[in-house]
Figure 1: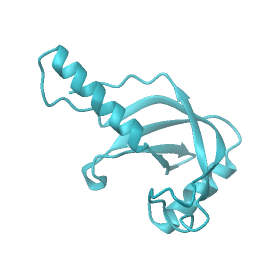
Figure 2 (figure 1 turned 135 degrees about the horizontal axis):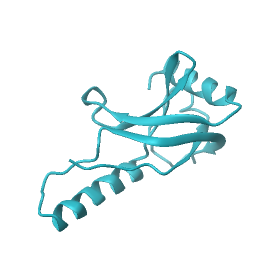
Figure 3 (figure 1 turned 90 degrees about the vertical axis):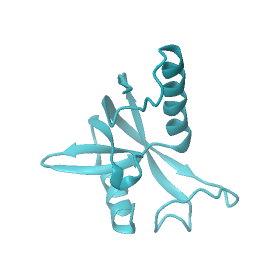
Figure 4 (figure 1 turned 30 degrees about the vertical axis):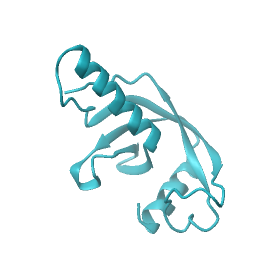
Length: 125
């Protein structure tokens, strides 16, 4: 996310007053990382990106399902639905944490993080 996009995502999260349906989408343009989008009126806003741990877990399930059903090369669906953004929390990274976060938050390492709940079905193909 570039600086303007990160700021827009933070402002969007701050302005939410009710649960909002969100979906995650992966695209080649973003290295197939799952980005979480919220529909706000007639706009679709990128509000989050799946963590490295969640991406790792999705691929581990893919390997397990593939082994069990003798189908190799399975990957998580490009679209994951049935999730809701129900709030936000404040997150902070320590000075030793080397994860890359977007400007302007890389200096303070303090930012809003979405709280997402749901019962999504993740399909593998």
